[in-house]
Length: 147
Image (cartoon, rainbow, N blue to C red; front, top):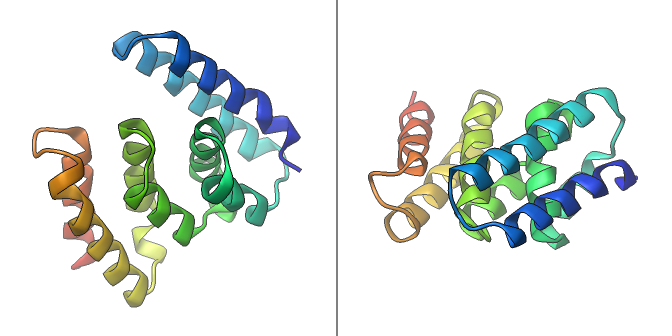
């Protein structure tokens, strides 16, 4: 049950809705992710439920699920990561999905790597510019996927 993570998702939503975009809001959002990663390390969660948050959850649940996947490799779901890259609801979510994909590359099958590359190539030219941190992560994915 993800009840223990619900307050984190709500906190993310509150920060996102109550503050203007900027470094302070990003810092507070990152704090929520740190808590979600720590929670995933010390609490038992069902990986299927965590992935469902990405597929069907609120913005806060989606980002909390990604952070939980970062914190506990047993919770990782490749399809959920692809969804958060291709159908992200914010630049913040997409950044963290790309960062998680970088962490997962070594464990992906050749077919998964090809799908990841195709997804990244499809979104990077219209969803973010070359001068963003997301572009840098996408470059890492493309480079490491060809190794």
